Each structure stands twice: as structure tokens, then as C-alpha cells.
Image: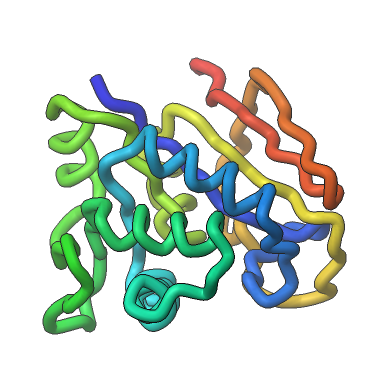
Length: 184
């Protein structure tokens, strides 16, 4: 059975703002390795549009930075599932639009053969967490206090207890915390 992994960058104060993050070569290499061990990304509309507006252009016009350019190719080639009720179509390579329920689609994906499935949109991480679909959390905390923005864990009604399984520290001060949900 495939694992659904919530993988996201966040500030020390819990916000998901890509403009506040430290996206250096070491971090891109880390995410390149994650993408090599996955075959599906799950996005909501906002994150999908953010990623789709940038990474395909890097594939067409590489930056010259090897880890960044490699990330662009990996994310361009991976299967992407976009949950949205407002989008009419998705144009990015290997992207599929889903307008139905998250639970049904994710359970179907988890039963299929393949590599890990990553969910990388804050809203979908929360929705997947509330449906008990997440098998692992990989939260990359950056040494930045944003002060405001989109909080990762908003609208959580029930307490969730996680078990720390490992950590990874980066030279720029980021730390990825790997958690598994505890069984109730």
C-alpha cells in the first residue's frame, strides 16, 4: 500500500509562504530526492496554479542552477492530481483535475501499485488529516518568523498526536520533522 505523505515548507510561526522561505541548493536537492521516491503529487487549486505558473518555464528556460533545474524537470514529469471545484481544466503536463471527494480518490490511489503520494497544499493537508488519510508528515520548518500569512494548521477541531520518527537539519537552519500519526 502506498503512503500519503504531507510534505510542506513552513515558517517557524507556522505559516506557508513560499516567498519567506530559504530555497537554497541543499533544500532543492532534498526535495529532488523526495520527488524521486514519489509518483504522484496532490494539490489544491491555489498551490497548483502557483507551481504551474513557474516550474514549466524553468524546464523550458533552465536557470543554470543544477538542483533547481533538476527539481523543475522532476516536478514537471510527475503525476499531479488537482482538487478544485472552480477550475474547468488543468494544462500542466501529467495533471488531472478531480472535482469529487478527496477521501475516495486518495483511498483509490493508496491501493494502487507505485511510489509515495505527496500532498503539498495546506488546505488538502488539513482535509486529509481530518479524514485520517495521512501516513507521514514531513514538515520543513524554516528559521523565519513571517508574522502573518496562510497558517498550515487552521480550522483544526480535533487534537492530533504525532510521533516524531526522525529529523533532518540543513546548513541554512531549516529542519525537517518527520512524524507519523499515532493510532487512537
